[in-house]
Image (cartoon, rainbow, N blue to C red; front, top):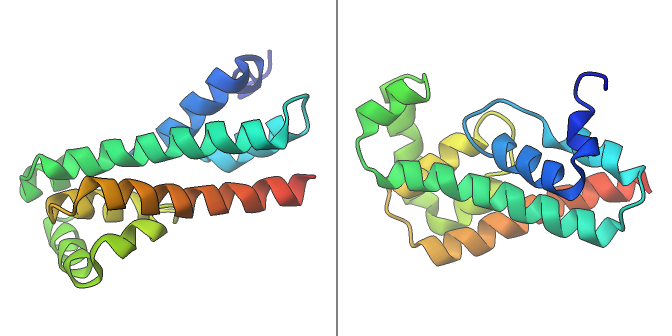
Length: 146
């Protein structure tokens, strides 16, 4: 089995794990895994649901990390400058739960999710908007692959 192909061999569970991990502070590209799996036997709708759900739950784990509430400790844990973390917290307070739509963005998506938790944004609207943003991204990936 070549490097990276075990995600595909693991099927939908592998896709779920890949998308979950990609939405945490672990740097990983789930789009490549989804694109490779789109060439396989799975229906696009199934891939879309699994990827969107896994990535949303991973993003919610980052949100949960933010809910722990200690900005300095979280900044050290995710290896970022505490001033940058504070900057994101202020930005999130300005835009509120709507910022969850942008958690799919590379590099800053994790910071947005953590900042939503730090700002104590209500989890249900965060989850819905986070899912919407992440699902839209995966819909584009699948549309490009079909």
